[in-house]
Image (tube, chains in turn cyan, orange):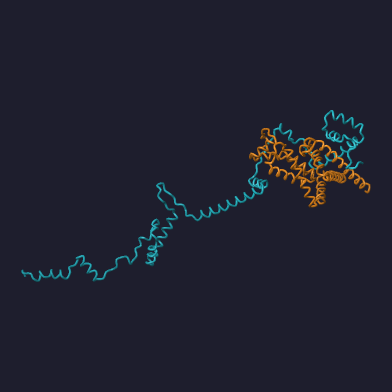
Length: 238
Length: 217
C-alpha cells in the first residue's frame, strides 16, 4: 500500500478522477479506458476509489435520505431557464416580529426597542393627560356653550348646598362670595341671590319711624300742629 | 438519523403552489432583495437551503450542527447582501459562506472538545434510524460502516474535505467547485485525488479492525 503523502504513481491521476466522476469527454474517456488496460496502478486505484465513492454515497443516502437528489435541485446554471414557483409565506405577526429580530443587526434591534419604549411612554402620558382633562363641552350648532348633564347636576347640587349652608350659618357664604375674584364671572353665580342679613334694612325704632314719617311729611310736625290749631282757637266766628 | 433527515426533506404542502412567477435568476433575486422585496431573499433561501444543508452535513457530519450552520450561512448572507459582488454567482457566494461557517464551527468545537460525546450521540441516532426489520447484526454493521465513513471524511483536512463534500454530496462539477473555492481546476482534481486516497486508507484500516473483531468473536 502506498503512503498517503506519496505522490501519484501515474501521471494521469487527474484524468483518473475526471473519468471516475464521469466528467471526461467521450474522446478523453475512450483514451483513459485504453490507458486503464495498460496501467496497473490506475486500474487498482480506480477500483478502490469506486468503493470509497459508493461508501460515501451510502452514508449520504442514510443521512439525508434516499430521496435527496442534488441534481434535481435547480442549480445556478439551470435556474435561468427554469421557471420557479413562488411560495407565499403567510407569517403571523409574532413570527414576523421574531424573524425580524432574528435577522436584524444589533443596532437595528436596539433602535427598534428604544422606539417601542418611547412609544409606550408617550402612550402612557397621553392616557394620563386624557384622564385628567374635564369632559369636553358639547357645542351646539349656534356655537353656544352647552353644559353636560353631569356639570348641570353638580351645579344644582352646589346651589342646594349653598342655600342650606346660608340658612344655617349666614356669614359663611358671604365670605365665600366676597372673597371670590372678579374673574370668575364665567362660572354660574348660584349664591348671588343669597342676600346677607346685615345688608337688609333693619327694623327702625319708634322714634326713627316718626322722624322718617315726619321727613316724608306723612305726619305734621309740632310747629305745623300749632299752626293748624291756632285758627281753631282764634276762630272769630266762634 | 435517516428518518429525521427524511422528515427534513419532505416537501411541505403549500396551497399557493399554483402561483407561478416569471423567470428570475439568483442575481436578479438579490437585486430585488436589495431594493426592498421581502420575499426575494426568502426565495433564495428556499432554492439553496437543501444544497447548503447537504454541504454543511458533509463538512460537519452531524445533523444538528449542519442545521445550525445552514441557518448561520443564510443569516450571514442576508447581513452581507450589500457586499455581494455581481461578478460572482450567488451560488458560489453562498457556498463560500457555508464552507467558512463550517470551518469556523469545527474549529470552535475542537477548542471545546465536543467530539467524543457527540460521536456517541450520533451513533445512537443512526441505530434508531435503521429499518425496524433489519437484523441486529446487520444494523450494527451498517451503522459502524456509516460511522467509519463519516469519521474518515470528517478527519480530512478542511481543504480536502470541502472538495469531497461538494463532489459527493452536492454533485457539483469540477468547474463549479473551482469557481466556488476560487482555485484552479487542476487543483480541485488533485485535491480530490488526494482525499480519495486518504479516505481509502482510513476505511481500509477500519475494515482490518472489523475483520479482527469478527475473528475474536
